[in-house]
Structures are given as C-alpha cells and as structure tokens.
Length: 121
Image (cartoon, rainbow, N blue to C red; front, top):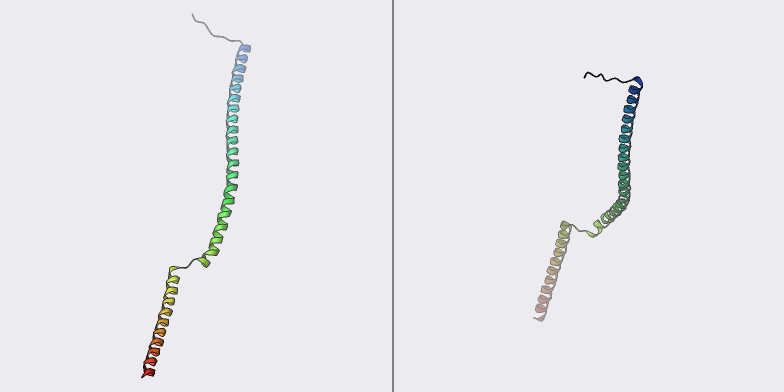
C-alpha cells in the first residue's frame, strides 16, 4: 500500500515543458483577447472622433454664422433701437414745441380779434 510516486527525469522535463507551454498558450490567448478588445475600443473611439469632427465642422460653421449675425445686430442696434429715456425726452420736446406753437397761435388770434373789434369801432 505504500507506493511511492516516482518519475524519471525525462518525464519530469516533459511535464515541465508541457506546463510551461500551456501557461504560455494561455497567456498568449489572454493577450490576443486583450489586444482585440483594445483594438475594438480604439476603432470605436476613432469612429466617434470622426463623427465629432464632422459635427464640430458643422458646429464651427454655425458658430461663425451666429457670430456674424451677432456682429450685424450690434451694428444695426444703435441705428434701429431707441431707448425709453431717449423716446420720452424726444416726445417731451415735441410736446413743448406744440404747446409753444399753440400759445403763439392763440396770441395771434387774440391780436387779430382785438384788432378786428378795435378797428370796427
């Protein structure tokens, strides 16, 4: 019942070579799988970046167009836009001038009526 497990030298060497070969084969398979995964990720990243570049070109063009429109609006704004205070001041000035004309017209009418009454006596 006491059996001793014994191997000859060539069997030990063969067993070691087999284990080392299996280890290297497993390592190579893992490395190939990792490389394939990395390549897939880089490919997906490259596709994403190319889409981003295309979108960036479109966005860049729309950004330039937006900047141009903004600059046009800045140029037109002082010409077309009137502030409330400026409008109020302009209207007040016009109303004052109209009131002054009304007073002058009223004075001219009084003078004309008084001359007509005085001239008729």
